[in-house]
Length: 124
Image (cartoon, rainbow, N blue to C red; front, side, top):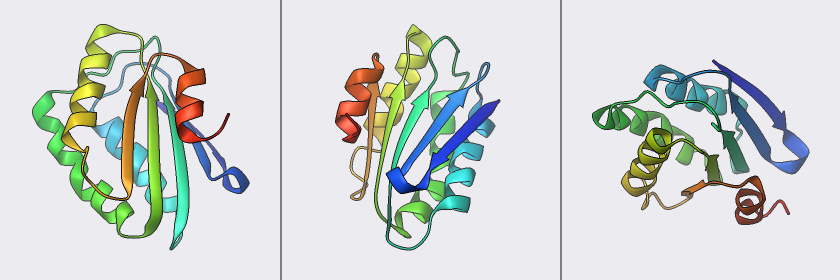
């Protein structure tokens, strides 16, 4: 389950994982982003998965590309930082980072501390 906090003035979406996540939770995260963005908007996303497992098979990461492509086509730039602290979640998040490294206006990075993630997002 996911909890969203959107701060339009700060161009910030905070997504908190409230239990284990599967590929459908990840897709719903991007579906929510599609519902809040407007043309030429800038968006920073902080995803907090600390303490919870991401139950995603690496091959399922391909299912996310259509949502990402649609968002990227309608936004000025889009940066996501994910906070992880469990080995399995770190592996999946790192595989996602490597897979979608070269999408132009989209940047994604894996972090273990909130301070580092906020600095990278330009929020600190």
